[in-house]
Image 1 (cartoon, rainbow, N blue to C red):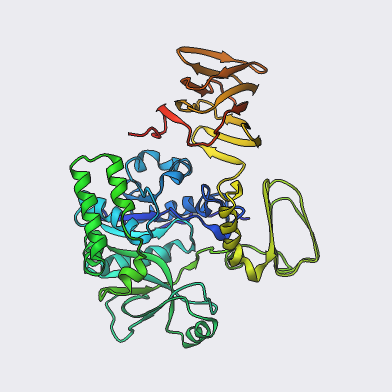
Image 2 (image 1 turned 60 degrees about the vertical axis):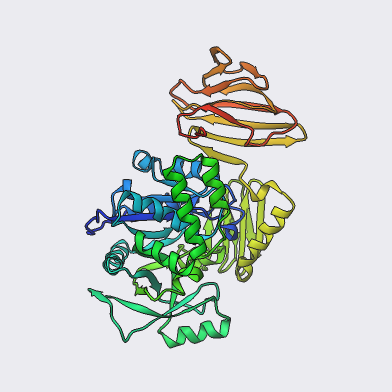
Length: 492
């Protein structure tokens, strides 16, 4: 696919505008490419940059990088930090972590709580991490228009002109009799009506009427205003968030704060607040948008060949039409497909009609019930220091290939339930084992006993590759006690 072009922007940065990237989703409909620990926003679906990198680059046109907030969970935070390493210093204190998913209203309230503490006049630009938007200047203009309305305490959402009778999105109808503001071709209106995901007949009716818009899931409002509206329409949630604020101010433990958050009732910001608020406003926008909600949605944004196929990777095809074929590493060969989706990864392959691509989520639910590892993560997992690939595993053992970037090093750590044996394939490994520090060359090896402090680092100028053999009764990634870490992953 074509590389993402870095769009220019004439938007003047607002010192009180804080983009909030919502990055806690799992993107289950994009399985097997997306996984629970490596969701859709971390994928390079279009261009060289991943969706969250594109999102970050998009929002820093409106605000300084150190004003961007990342709302996510502990399981995904590390991978996100790796992908946003260009902005490491700016984002170092800007991750707001949900210990457990409680839907969008609590997540947004938690960020709003922090922003009000930092800046009482803070305006939040809430954007999902995994959407595709084309037209930077049109996006900037919409943000500027919405921010103007937000300063008047409106809760603003962007309305997307529908291009088909879509049943997977909510719809919004503006009250065009009232214009709240105007900038160029953009206008803001009060919301007349919210509609939950309609049936096919209703969706076709809304498309024909021409006065309904898709709910984009993007919002602009004052942080204080959204907290006030949550208090008005979700008083129990508001009390819980205020309790969390009190715990933070009193210096409570992380565990106490997390327990208070997990006790919150899950609430959607759309149904819990926006659909009930008298301050809801909509700005119909003119940029190209897709939430990339399923494999079939790539039709809207990806480049096609003459037969209407979207082909990525090492693929050989004869006579297929309007199909999506994705090859990760292996050769994928297809003949005579029509309106099909084929996605091949090293450990899982998906084949389905494009019309049923939304049902992939049901497959992931089955994998979760089976406790199958294929829903959780890929065989190759990226880390700040490099990556590891699971080569083989069975009862009591796991074999990995570990790659450490030049100058990279893993945390100083120990394991309670496993030992490890390292063999250097290429490069030089600097090993800390207990009190000893020594180098290993190609072909040399060492043993790391259970409960032994250890660290692996690469002092060389080329990538270090080792084979790691783990043995023990439990081999999960959560059996890691980090004692010191260059990437801020030790528990406080």
